[in-house]
Length: 380
Image (cartoon, rainbow, N blue to C red; front, side):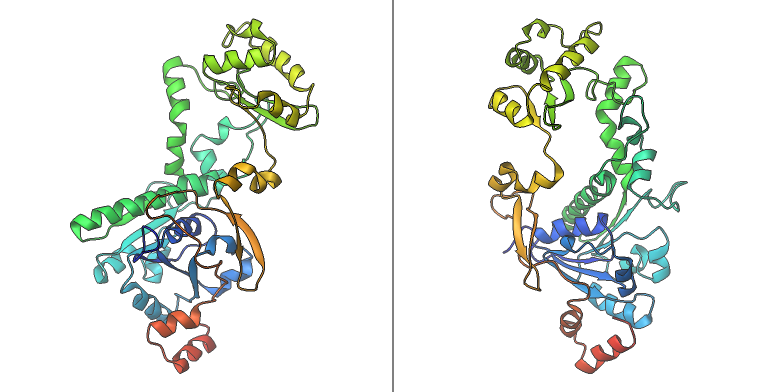
């Protein structure tokens, strides 16, 4: 057995980030994943190959009857189907849940969309920034006196989409163990983001006051939860929220006079300004040496380009060098979900677009001549 999901077969019709990241997590833990895309999408330059480790890839034109016939032969022994089309597209292609469920009732069918399968926004186009904006999250990101800032990472795609899709699929697998029947998993990336407002909603509830960008307890309002520029232009992130951490920090910075003034509104800006002055006196590396293993909840803001070289991730096995089919070695992320008895693993390098066309079709019983005709007719 290789991974918790060994023996589970996944057909992934999605593209871009949310669906492929979801199916990569399933593949890392042993699922057999076949990604299926029309080869015309390769021209868009949006095939993120690092998401295709541990997978096979089939290029297939689902708009053709023969392409759809290939898909149904694959679906005959599949456990999970993932798609990320706009609502209604899968139905037009004839590969939607209702149609699939009639022939293969055990299949779990997961749709990942921006706004869900129903509701007034179901047909709207959107991307990560739009989902963050609609969910009220973007309004809380950025400088207090400036516009909302777009994060440099795709929070909605992964946090609202991929992760919830994995959870939904695994829940449906558990339910199928009892019922014997699959079900539809409706994942809206915007729905998934709403839960990110749990603490802001709580703070708003108890205060009765509106929230303001970069002016709240966990967003720059106080010196204890803030970021500070250092002498070398780097930054230190301070998260000394609990009073014991705050006191330790004040002692480390020789500013014990502020130990009992952590949330003092009258002194709030004075303390922040003083912290800014102090942190500018040393480099980020020097501050890391000062704090060492002290209980102060402070760390350097690691630049993106250094993250994969961070000793923490190396020690945790979260950085891996994997070899592509062309012999090139590429550094990638490790497996973040660690299980003691059935750990995930790297089994195959990222699949190239259409790499496994011949292998998959041959396993389905197609002859060499039939495969060549499918290729010549642009079905694969």
